[in-house]
Image (tube, rainbow, N blue to C red; front, top):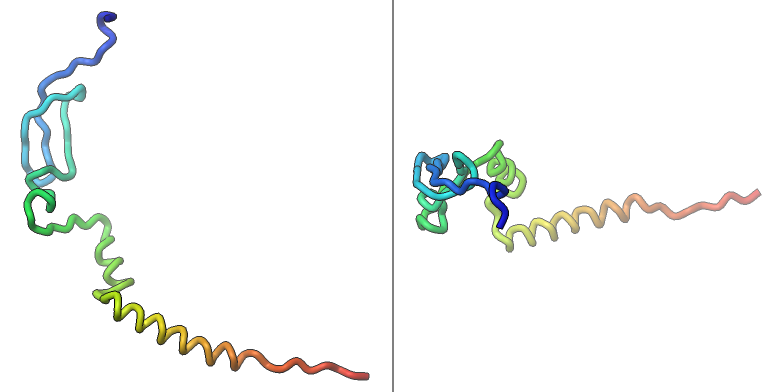
Length: 98
């Protein structure tokens, strides 16, 4: 094995955005995490939304709190309202005779 080609593998302190810190080993001198096992919903069992740039609000504004059944009925109503409007636009073609 060649000497001095491998990075140093040191013990570092990892810091999460929630404030949790723990010791681990890494080749980087310090670790900054967005989410860890102390704040992740899978490990904690509670839902905590981390909203970045209003994405959750945009989603609820666009889709609302609809169930799949409500969405299906809304789509059928939209199709039904478009169908008569499309039929009204179609006019019979007239031919010009000389």
